Image 1 (cartoon, rainbow, N blue to C red):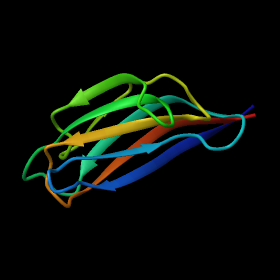
Image 2 (tube, rainbow, N blue to C red):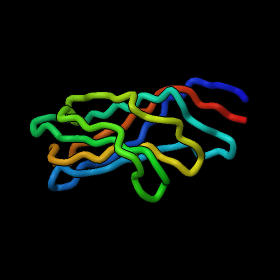
Image 3 (cartoon, one colour):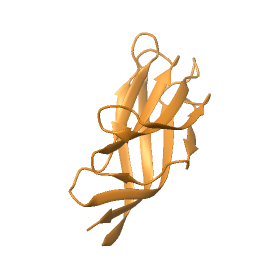
Image 4 (cartoon, rainbow, N blue to C red):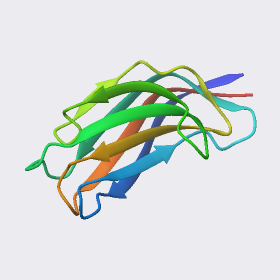
Length: 113
């Protein structure tokens, strides 16, 4: 199994209420992500968004990892377990600035068999 450095990003534009979500996960067969840190931030922070981070199946957020009241200014969590193909890391922003671009950045290790 090869271990590579991981930096993956997912973007969204917050809607008229300042809400939005972004997700990203491994896509190649035999790939898994571990030792993860998920960081969130938005392009503006007049209204500071609350952001919750989840991990789970690609269609629905699974387990709750962390939440922050600094979803626009920026915050991170390391409370994530290994994510395998078919899984995703999700960030869900609420109450931020309408039209702001929000980004979820996941760093750690990518293992490929």
